[in-house]
Length: 142
Image (cartoon, rainbow, N blue to C red; front, side, top):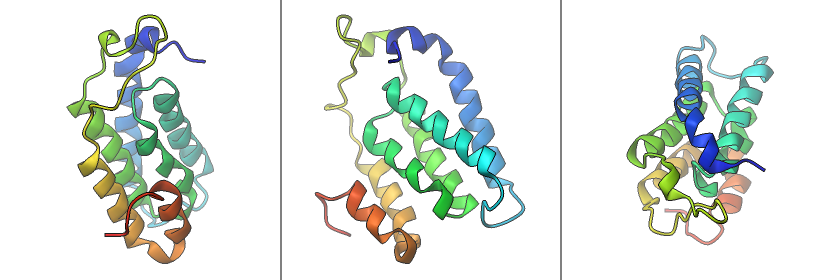
C-alpha cells in the first residue's frame, strides 16, 4: 500500500520519468515496440504507481494493460493523456482524505481524457476490440 500523501513529495520525479518515457516512445525508430520489454514494463509500472498512489483515476490507468499490443506512437499518446491529466489536475496532499488517504475523483471531469483513450482504441479496433468493452463496458462505441 502506498501512502499517497507522503508520495506527493516524489511527484516531480515520477513526472520526470513519465516525460522521459513519452520522449522515448515518440522517438523510437520502429513503429512497434517489439523487443522493448524493459521499456514497456517501466511504462506499465509507472502507470500502476500512479494508480496505486491515486495520482490518476483507475479509468486512465487501464490502457497500460494493452501497451504490448499497440504501436509506439499509441503508447506515447496514452502516456500523454496521463501527463495532461496530471498537469490539469495538480497533485497536493490536500486532495487526499487525511484519515484514509484516499482521493475522491467524483468531481473530476474525465470526459476528454476518456475520449482520447477511445480514439487510440478505435485506431486499433481489430486488435483491441475486447479492450474497449473492458474499459468502457458502460458506454457506447461513439
